[in-house]
Structures are given as C-alpha cells and as structure tokens.
Length: 231
Image (cartoon, rainbow, N blue to C red; front, side, top):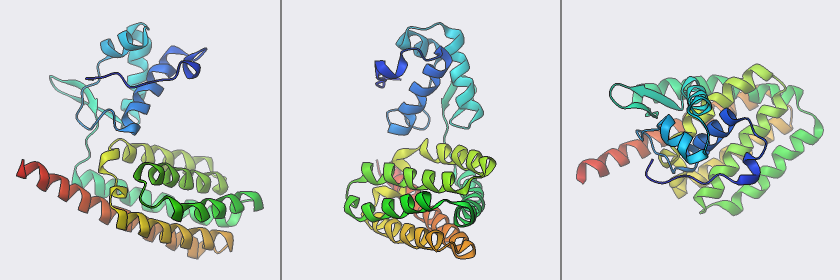
C-alpha cells in the first residue's frame, strides 16, 4: 500500500476494530486506491488505523472469505485478480441472481420501492459522461432492486458478487461513454418491466443487461491487456 486511503474519523468512532479494518480496506478497493494484485499487509493496516494486528487480521480474513482478497505464495494477501475464466463464471452467476431478483422485485416490491427504482432511472441520463457518478448510480440501482425483491438470500449472494466485481473498479466497462449510454437504456427497460410487475420481462431484461455488461467487461480487459503489452 503506497499510500493510505482515507477513512473519515466520524465513521470510525465507536466501530468495532475488525469492522474498521474491513471497511477501510474495502473502501480503498472500491475506490480504486488499491488495485488488483496490490499487497495488503495486516502490519500496515494495524499501523495505519492504530489498532492491534488481531482485528486487522480479522478484517482481512473477512475480505478474503468474500473474494476481495486472495492469498499468494511469498506475497501474502493481495487484492484479488479476476482472470477471464473466473470472470465468465462470475457473470454467469450474476446473470442468474440478477434475473431472479428482478422477477422477485416485480412480484414483491412495494409501490414506493418501485417508484424509487423508476426515479433513479430518470436521473441517470444526466450522469452520462461522469464515470464515477455513473458507477455509484449503477451500484445504487441494483441495490434498489435487491431491496425490492424481498429475498434475503438472493440479495446476500448478489451483493457478494457485486463486491467482487467492484474489486477492479478500473476494469469497469463504464469507462466507455458508449457503454454508459447503453446502461441507461438497459436500466430503463428493466425498471419499466419491474414497474409493470411483469416478472418474466424483468427477468429477461436483467439477464440481457448482465450479458451486455460481461461482453463490455471483456472488451475493457482486452484493451487493458493490449495497452500493457504495448508498454
């Protein structure tokens, strides 16, 4: 960790120490301050947060269990790197989960919950061109669907996979402005189907959205690889 990501003191006050370590490292991963392959040491985390190694280790173990960190021989824990095979498996699992959640949201979502999803979509076109805002808005959109689905297990598994995807924020397909435009359209179709309580259509729209996200992610990965080889 070349530089220490920022954690707000107000967020840390009164928080269990292991939770502080978990939140701080996760925040650094999701913000892109820590990149795939970066080493994360319990010693440095403990020194940075002024806590003992035990809670630092517990926080890192939790991140490892969630797939955000992985162990490498002679290096220890590093931010997880997702290869193409793992990415394919990850997005297939997301496709299944997000489709099911969309169906559940159409069936189980309350009026206010469905209205919140629609309002979220209405704001999205104005964010195109701002990668960071689109990224956060996209995550919030899927969180609204998770809540509207009222299925704690689908929501838990979906959030876990979303966190793994977020571990490589710089690999997000939303760096491409054309993909941002496509995401807006895909979200609108999905939100409309949910609002109309058409579970089957919502499931299809969610599945197509994740398929498109996977294809776009592969293009970004290929472009990054080409740039690395050119250097």
